[in-house]
Length: 419
RNA sequence: GUGGGUGUAGCUCAGUUGGCAGAGCGCCAGGUUGUGGUCCUGGAUGUCGAGGGUUCAAGUCCCUUCACUCACCCCA
Image 1 (cartoon, rainbow, N blue to C red):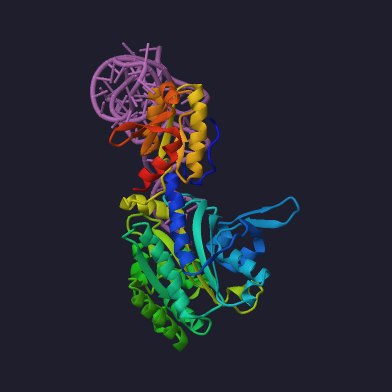
Image 2: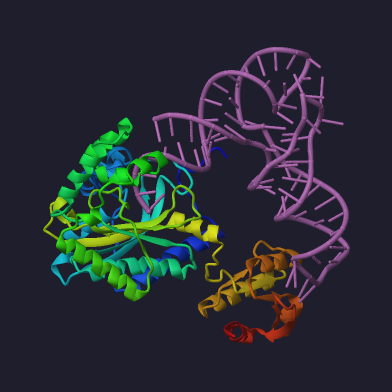
């Protein structure tokens, strides 16, 4: 076969795909319980939305977007993240004119044209939560708690929450100037010197040891916060403490998208290698105005489903998945196969996960299928059984087998499975 | 965009100074014609990534190319 999946696009197929769905379900359940409703937004949007929403100076916009002209000549872009599209949809459909905050979740693929590596893909799967229309720090803590609950539900024990604040339009400019003045005095390479002028905060986040050393004494945002940002940040931390969620104050944590303000956070996993961020989010109080909307504060996060899969596998966490098959039918001969087909249908309508051997397999092959299906029970139906009006119900784990009248099979199996 | 590593069976990988293409797992069949797993026996499957070169002879050496992968950068 000469075709292969596009570069940097992970695929999930059985049995791993069951875990993929379970990851989404764990976060969806946490969001639902917190009063968040589902929103479905487009996978692509007008290019301009992302350019203005994500920020012209970000790497995501300048070199990572999947942008193309459609047949009508419009420039469209596959979403590199969710927030801009969700906010656009909220504004377009006037969801913000009702009671606030508007609390939403969504999930699906996002796209960034990057060189792939472990945990970094060109098509990445995210689970996204947004709370739009309030500055209440309780909602900052609530979104963090939803992500935290998701990780807990999946059995992940090594997740770290890194917390920071980036200040607001009042206090950040002065800090930014102070930081730039400090950084300009350092001996740094060309690319880094350019970043000092474009986005100086990101220099703090550099991974190279020699750079880390040089910026060790850089001024920190936490020393330059205005009174309201400081109060906001303190309250978020108090509420996290109330919920029993542990965090690490990380004053150097910077996020790559321009719209963040005040609360920013990242979830990190120590077993993942270079791409260790398994989720991240923050407040975006100016974003609505950036894309032409009214003043409308918001906060949200996205978690990376691909990286969570890697974290689950790295930790060896056992994620519960629903059974694929509880009862497996083993028919012998064509007449029995036809009867078995309707019996399997009855079982399914009764809520039992049921499958059967197809293709006229022999007993041995069909039993092998029963074994591999993971079913707790096999139902064997041959000519002798048909004549007697019964089928053999076999307990796959113990091996015991007994004849059960065909009319009683569904009830018998439902009873045994519920134990 | 920059740098490193790796391409051999469905999967994970051995393959010596250049000399018959291999193992484990998986798959199929039989042992057991109405019974799976465990066990035993047997079997099938290869463009050695691709193209070119050196050589009596290339999986092995040389060149080119493609793919995958890890890291920088950046981010979920």
